[in-house]
Image 1 (tube, one colour):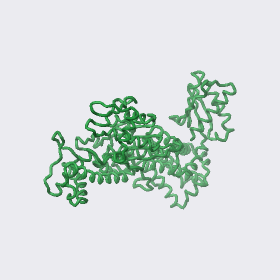
Image 2 (cartoon, helix red, strand yellow):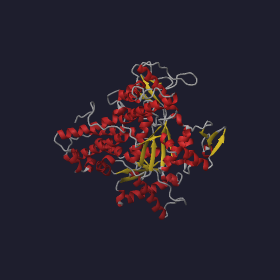
Image 3 (cartoon, rainbow, N blue to C red):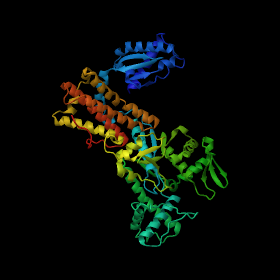
Image 4 (cartoon, rainbow, N blue to C red):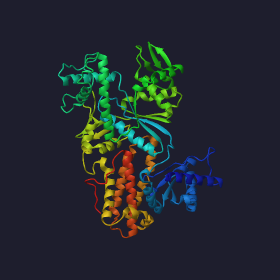
Length: 591
């Protein structure tokens, strides 16, 4: 990375000046040199405040001046530092580094040569990560809240892979237990209706309706009725199941209904370009004895205790806010028992890190999961939990909170039907996971460039259009770019050169964006970056003609910049899980 080269260069300069007796360093050694991009390019391409770490003002200004002078003198002599044009100082001790325009422009070829792997960094160095997300049980279609976890998890997995990690994307679900029995009774209700038999909605112990039902006020909402018909078709119109005893009947019908719902969930994930490497069934942990084995391991380790007839797990010993029940007084295991078995299963698979992407109502899992990892002998840092906030649909400038209780839960498929999978993904990923998301439906449905969800795709389509026009005009941009000398652009008029350099600076940020997303586990930075690249290309295109360029050399160099922009935009869209279209109805192709 450019930043890493500059860090090494500055660190070497400090060491050299120290050896010459011109600069003091702490006994602990040279502090880490932090190199960042200034907010304004007038202050350089990169800057560091290392002088302020070595001394306070006004001494820091003297140190900065010494370092700048040394770097200006030695950088031209070291081939690895050929990228540096000049080093300046500012303020109480800041060091600003300007890169050579010729070097910046020539990096277009490096980007083109990298192709679909452009921006890849070796941050992970093969370290293994288990990334679990969505994990909605098969009791109904995926809703807009689940969708946020899906898009965050899938995109984060893409970014982590680009950062050098070996990532396993995993979906964890449960198709047994009380929820599935409720689903079975609800499905039976719709089966009986379809057969013309007496039918009554199932009720809970409090006498209130309990289960999973279609919205009776919406004639188009027939999801559970459809599931019931599928179960009827495979059970000889209910003859195989309706005569069974109550609990057995509910469990079997629920199991069959869950299987169909799981197929529906898989289809939704595929439609949205959300991919999983592993679909893990919680029931397997019971049948293969892992739940009981996990409990016995904790018992032997001394982490369980008996109270009020129940078996508890002493998670407070490891920082949890309260202890957790594993086995109820009646002998039934709790969800926590399955969590114990599941995290033990993951740890036994040898992952270096476990990442969970969970909804806003899962804050209690943070302390619990970290405590469990420690009980099995691992560091709490091995477990990282991302908690994403609620999603609201904004209709006619009014934000509507979705709620099962209110009966206005929006299915993710319905939202995608309105705005398409790519726009849906982009809008979900535009905001940090720790902020509430107001999905502006009116804006997302717009077809023009004012729709932010289309911005990066329009940028890619415009690049493709430019290259297509060049071919139609008899040029060969792919071939011509290979022989281009991009340094020729340094002689362009200032306004054109500024646009060309600005485009290159944006393109070269990709590796830093990938690193930032991977380190912070925040994939939303990709959306802003993609929009910045698209904007930089539009300015370059508007200011710097290609087919009407003043010379063949300039045209060829601008072809190379255009191909580099296409490479980066395609990479960003791929990481976001979106398509990279070559044509869009309103994408400008004029040249």
